[in-house]
Image (cartoon, rainbow, N blue to C red; front, top):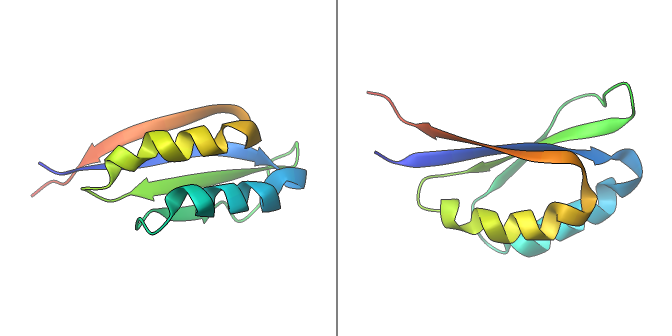
Length: 84
């Protein structure tokens, strides 16, 4: 079965632009999606989610290293498989 990764974490509002640049540089041309919750949390942090399609999960460590300086809290990695 093919595995997809869903990775989520928080970024401080003041770091959003720098974190986005870091993500884009680390992603290069990989088809990794980056989403953001529509609103910040009570502390002003934004929740981001990276989605790694099957066949691209090997890129997660590279992106994780690039994003580490911008994280507020921990980076959570979830693995899912397609059903049916």
